[in-house]
Image: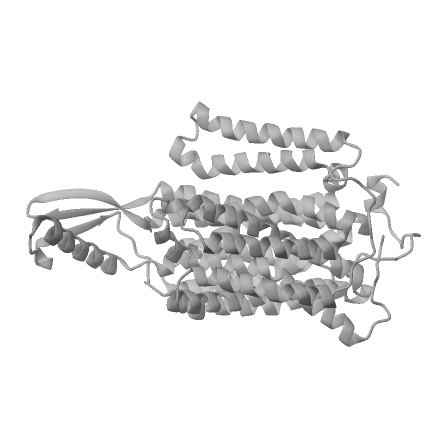
Length: 538
């Protein structure tokens, strides 16, 4: 059967449903399996929420990195985007449970590497190992589709999104307590311990799917996809520093685009591609993927910007710190005993954001409500998808995200207003992460499900990485400088780890534009407007 006819086809396939589905199992057995799958797939979103919220506290451990501290998140998203389709294909070929466990081992090893080093590049290498856990969601969706009774698949996918909401609620609280009472490395010790604890539970409770696709693995295609996306993201992140139009800078973008073109050509010619381009090009799949790419930009910007802004000291507190530092330096180096009024500090440009919250305060005042609403609306989206179709919660989620971005451009940049906009972001977050995978599951046959949801993971990770890279470029172009005058002598220097408000506003505008594009694309979708079947139409 051709790809087009497979995607278009209606009615139940004649092939037997021999995936190991738990149709005859007790409700306790079914829900236990689902609970463990969801908990284990939480390692990626939990670490993302914890680390994104703690970047302002991690940055001082790596002096000189500046706004590029966001590569803590960009590298995670980049490697996750590159690995997800390959892991999705491997799970179809070798077994989903095996890959589930393997990703847990790699994630635990990456946590150890990051926690035991003070070298920036070694820390990033650990983050890259941790990034393979992004594909746990891909494999979790596959296990849910293969193992749960058909009637429960849409609800199971919605509960997986509920799990994401749970991590968004719990992770900042836990991160805040760990960082405020110990240090940021304690987060990685917790993530390591949680993963090691979950590995044997997964091995004992979750059965293996018996579905196998008898194909080889296209390593060349995976390498081209990884290399191309990496070069494009480096251009996006560093273009402002290097000069967007300089030939050597453009070379990174051109090389990345050429690798991605080569990837498409290879995938069209190779006998067993890592990604079925023809399948992905069908509107039932491609429109979901394009929407995911643009929508996820907002996720990357929101996850980084709000936590960093509210944890930044206020302008008055920052000025006081600079005065005290100047007095201490003068006393140590020049044996001068200055009074505070002898030091004049002007911050250019001034800024209105910055509440100086601790990480735990940020978690309690902002992240908790966001996570709880995400958890609730993830479940609601699963129920809506089962009753009416997943297209409806998707449209609602992207429209809300665009509204959140507009509000964050114009509202005062203080924690109370951010708590309000973050609440709406949590609603959109839950709706989106329940609807998007359900739309893909409804669009492809089960033998293509692993790789197709894997590519959805690529688009989501790429969107997050692009959004984070874009706001990094805006912040690098809007540094804050302090003009310090002492006894008639004036010097000007950039303030490390603090950025101009205009850079954040540009980031919010970027989120608005990408969300609107995602909404316009989603409006063209024709499928997903009828009750979800859990993939039973193939």
